[in-house]
Amino acid sequence: MVRIGILTSGGDCPGLNAVIRAVVRKVERVHGGTVVGFRDAWRGVLEDDWEALDVARCRGILPRGGTILGTSRIQPYQFPDGVEVVKATMARLALDGFVVVGGDGSLGAARDLHDDGVNCVGVPKTIDNDIALTEMTFGFDTAVHICSAAIDRLHTTAEAHDRVIVVEVMGRDAGHIAVRAGLAGGATMTLIPEVPFDIAEVCEALQRRHAGMSYASIVVVAEGATPVPGTMPEPRYEVDRFGHRRLGGISQVLASEIEGRTGIETRVTILGHVQRGGTPTAFDRVLATRYGVGAADAAAEGDWGRMLALQADRIVRVPLHEATGRTRFVDLELYDEVARPFFAS
Image 1 (tube, one colour):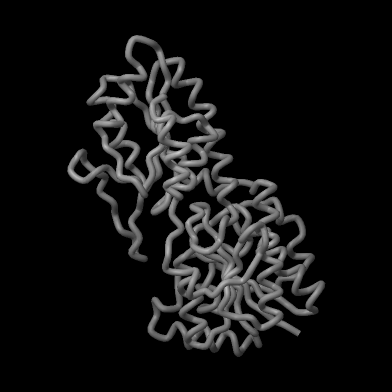
Image 2 (cartoon, rainbow, N blue to C red):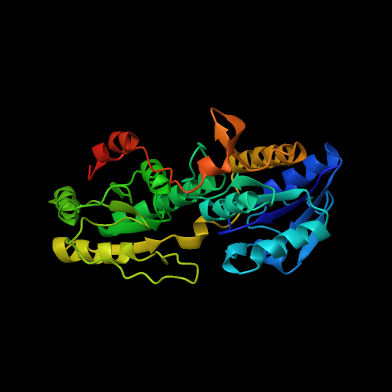
C-alpha cells in the first residue's frame, strides 16, 4: 500500500487543486493508499506542517484556483541540513516518496533530492509553458484565455482615443503566452524574449499604421522581452532572495519610447498576477487531472525520478534529469508565421 506526500511548489497556477484531487482520488480509490499534503511546499516538510488528505477533503476543489496546500519557493538545499530533515520527515511519516508539483526550479530540486536518496515524482506546472519534454503545462491555457479576453477589451478603448496600448504579459524566458494571446486577441505586434526587438522598427511600423487615419494599436510584450542592446533604456530589475529577477516594467519603458519617438499617445496595461488567478479552464482541469492520475500511478509503481509529460495527447513519463535545466522556447518558425506577418498591419 503506497503512502505518499504531495506538495505544490513555486508560483501558484490554475489547476493545482485539480492535480491534488486527482492524486488523492487515484491513490485512495484505486491503489488503496494514503496521501499527506505538506503546507507551503518544502517548508511544510522541513517544519513538519502537514495534513492528511482524502477524497472527502478534496471535494469541491476541482474548479478552484490557487492551491489548498499553499506554496512557497523554499527548497531543502537552502539549508545545510535540509536534505537530512526531509529524509527524517519521510521516515517518521512512513512515506514512500513525494509528488512534487512545480516549475523548472522545483523540479530541479526534486531531481537532486532523488539523486540524494529521496524518492520524487514531478508534475510540470507553469503558466509560461516553458518546461522541456512536455507539449503543454496546465495553467497555460487559462493564462492565454485571460490575456486574450483583456486584449479584446483594450481594443475598444484604444480605438476610441487613437492610442497605442502596450499590454505586458508573463513570460520570463519564453514568449508562449504573448504569442498565443497576441494572435488570439488580434494584437498589432508581439514582442518576446526569444527575439530582441528593434525599437526603431517598432516605432516606424506604428507610425505607418497611424498615418493619416484613426487606428488603435495593441502591442503585446512578454515581461522578459528585451530590446536590441544599446537601442533604448532597459528596466532595472531587483533580485529576490532566491536569486530571481523581479520582472515587470518593460512595458512602461517601451511605452515611453513609443510615445516619445512617434508622438502617438501610448498607455500601459500590466496584467500581472491576474493571469494566475481564478478558476482554471476546462482544458486545464482535464490536463491537471491527467497529470495527477499519472503521478499517482508512477508513485504506486515505485517509478521514481520521473516527470509526467504530455506528448501526442498522451501522458508519459520522462526522466527528471532530461526534463530539467532546459527551457522550452517559442518555435521561431511559428512566431515568424503567425506574428511577423501581422506586424503593424
